[in-house]
Length: 431
Ligand code: ACO
Image (cartoon, rainbow, N blue to C red; front, side, top):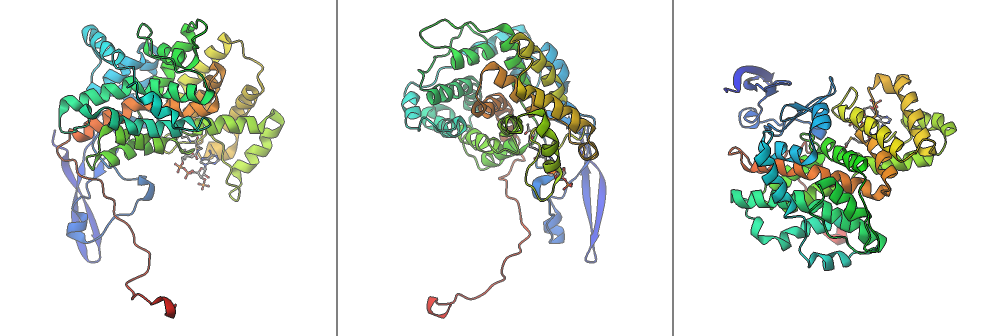
């Protein structure tokens, strides 16, 4: 398809420059400014990339106004209802839904890679027990490049494939180990007779001295959390993975960079921050004060779990997550928990409050995922690691897409320099 069929004209400083307009399959047209500096000697300015496309991608599409999320064209609601996480992984990685044979083969390949190198156990022991599991994960995932040398050559498609499978398979094991380590409990080895989400729950909650049977409803809820977080186009952590990868860094190092970025409270750290906020609010009577603070520009407090850079309508993932939250809480018989009461009331008030309605600040996926994870028995510190486990397939799919793109270049943003102009060095005695 010819992507360049029209031009935009930019006039400034007495110059006129024609800029091609690129056509997406769906979504806004994109003005190609690659030649702008060469022809016009100017940069564009867009901190936060609010209007800048940094790459082509055929993986995920979001329409923030409609509240739509598509993985390879398939709506997230349909996938959440009919698919499962490993099938979504296949879809994101290879572009199409698998047939039965392809699915079995993919499941077998992932399952055969769930154990980590035994020496990694010693690596974990170097961390303090009270380390945040995200801190441990950044370190351990980065260290995978030291343990799996045979899949770090990014120019070899087979090694890229093996690295992708290794990361999808081992991230749950690494996250569960980080959790077990923080508890002072023995690591639980993966159990290949279990499906992917059940295996993760087993590694987190089983202990060697008693049997642990995974509840299918909890396993389904975990599978959904994973599907809903699997990819989200060019978000901060994915862009970090792409930028790190653009220099030719190996995929394990790039995903470790993505995990570091995800940790921030404005991104993946929001689910932990949200639950902590709900607990801090404590009771329904304190909600009006929290709402007042969230609106006050002189107060840095924000309602965590509300708002999104792209969604200016209900986050479609939040709708599915809300249903899952109801199912899990019903199963576990949690109805009168104070945190839940605060969450429900906060949601009700924020959806009616003029400030939130006007700014289109709806509850996002993190608002509900934290409630489910807490009910399942996870401490808040594990919420973001679970997000990292789920997003690994998105990071690696986007990284593979970038490496396979012949037009890919090292990422190198420009700047609007506002510092000192050239000046001469002053000797210490004269300052
Ligand atoms: N509480 C109160 N006010 C808010 C909130 C909030 N959660 N979010 C945005 N606003 C206000 C801002 O103060 C701003 O007001 P103004 O126009 O009067 O200055 C307006 O809404 C727009 O907000 P921005 O920060 O400019 O929007 P941006 O797109 O940069 O930020 C973000 C999006 C970071 C998600 C923001 O909404 C936020 O901080 N939310 C809380 C954290 C959170 O839940 N993050 C999870 C994101 S989803 C994910 O990563 C899976």
